[in-house]
Image (cartoon, rainbow over all chains, first blue to last red):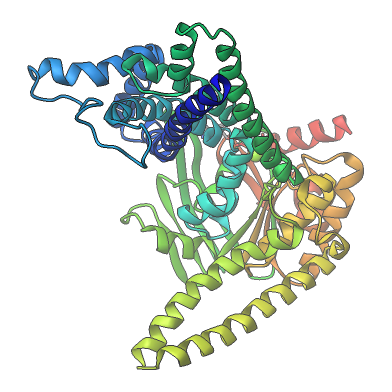
Length: 230
Length: 280
Ligand SMILES: Nc1ncnc2c1ncn2[C@@H]1O[C@H](COP(=O)(O)OP(=O)(O)OP(=O)(O)O)[C@@H](O)[C@H]1O
Ligand SMILES: [Mg+2]
């Protein structure tokens, strides 16, 4: 009976974890690409601005950033702005996802966009200038060169660091429960305080299976791109 | 006026002057080789001719058309692309596209140009008031025909360079000599008026240079107009109609190969040729 209800509780928390993970990727990957273009811009002020932003985002704890995004807007506006709490909040997808979740999602998306932007930048800059020039002398447009020549080579190169970062994200989602998002870790800690010590190991198993699946997926992609060498 | 006429090319990178007033001319169907010590500006010259670098001063005309005038306003990208297409460039380090097989490396650029052309063709048909279905039919047929042509030409080029059996291989599966021959076929697929080579054999093992030089030789016999930067003096002697010796950003001496190699006039060319024969 306990096992069944605890499993149900963890599964419920896991849905939130999964959602936070997936939505963070959806927002942070494109945003990261955009930021990487800014940090490579020929326009000095823009480049410097975004380099500083990336430095701050990578140089401070994610937990601090979550706190800043969740608490600071309300504090500086004297309570005018509050992220809706669980009681007042909207319910998404019929899960326990509340708008505390929204604050966490914003923090995660921005933070991971900074990390991804550095991966993209390094990947793009590692492609030899010669590839670009070969495209140019063959009369291709800049767009064609990026999408038809450069992009797939970049993807191949950044799969390993991207895989690393993504797996880190799975585990970082647990930080969301510091502002009360009811995720997998939150559920596990509830049961732990009720005296079920094994639940933390059980929760660990959820994370392990999740990261295991991701590892397999990234491995597959890597293998798919093995037919050429950059 | 010559087929290709370059007048007074100047190019500097910041403080360093790399080209200091280069004049060149080349007739159609002839081969010009450029020799000279390292750092003399040979690569920079080829890059300027191919619009990869911009000269600070000078003009270039091809086939009676003024292509480049450093004094005039900058071209937009479309104009620049069309100007680039007059020339082909084969790089020292091949720069094949690693994710495409040999055939696709050769056909990629022609196919992209076809896509552009199709867009224009479509607009034109629309203007003529042709119906949607009719346009689609006509376009599909035209596209199929053109793709067929592109593939056939690529196959022909690959068989000329002796690579037909490698057409499905990826660059990482080829030797350096084979890669360079693919790069030559790729450049030829766009039918450049002038094909340029920047030390096409310098990145190759000595036993692989022969196959590449033979291909270039066969291009001369087809009557193609070429500019070749090379350190292979025997090859330069044998393939050139005209030799230019560059040193420190200027043309130190130029002339027929027999004269340049047989009785060089300037001290610098004599010293350069002595240096090379000592190495060999
Ligand atoms: N992008 C650049 N920025 C600054 N200096 C450059 C650049 N490209 C070339 N140079 C300089 O220009 C000079 C000529 O270089 P270039 O590559 O044209 O010589 P080269 O004749 O091709 O030499 P090599 O035989 O070694 O290939 C060199 O002194 C080089 O350092
Ligand atoms: Mg060079």
